[in-house]
Amino acid sequence: MKPFTIIVPVYNEEEVIAGNVQKLIDYSNTLSTPYEIIAVSNGSTDASVKIGQELQQKHPQFKFIALPEKGVGRAFKHGILEARYDHIIFMDADLSADLSFIEKANNLLDKYALVLGAKIKGLQNRGLFRKFGSFVFYMSVLALMGLKYVDYAPGAKAYQKDFLKRYFNYIDDCTSFVLNLTFIAHVKKKPVAEIPIACDDRRKSRFNLWIEAGSKYRGLFSLKFRQLIGSL
Image 1: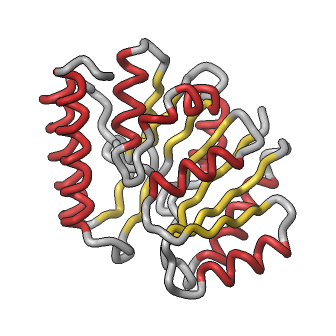
Image 2 (image 1 turned 135 degrees about the horizontal axis):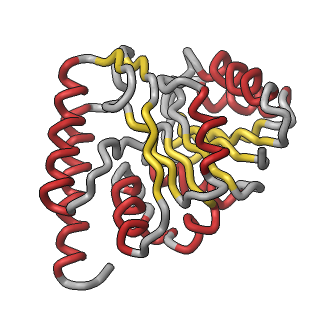
């Protein structure tokens, strides 16, 4: 198994960051390969930054970055620039996706440019609203872009670093980067794998879900427009 980097965005996660970093370390230690965990706070206003900096002093395999502005994609981009390893795995701070995704995705990255963890195809412990919203967005992407993948949320996704560096400009500051990167991989005929994941996502979101939905659809329509005018 090749070394890997885990990137975790952090926004007001003071209640879970210490415990979940420890969970990531404990799991990654079982894989018998070098790894690093990079957590990137994006606009946190609670004690997340203080806790993250303390964890960085305690764990040599953990790095913490604090950004003043919100943005999951913004956090991801900073994590990529700091990553030492060629296999990059993106996990949500609440670790709602089963940690087994890390090992499965890392192995698949030997052959695939992207690995998409798909909640719809796995076991979902999520609210009905979130399930319905994910399904509607999947159908919208299928209708507008012709992509048959089912999960475009940021968490539980993995990438070859060379692919990310080549198409870095497709990573927006919000959450449309998963769709953008998946579509460009499709256009450029880069191999993409999609695997089912178990997901326990019952916690109240850190973000306004309606605003997040609006951001996703703006990203989708922007991508379609760029396709139509030939600017991809």
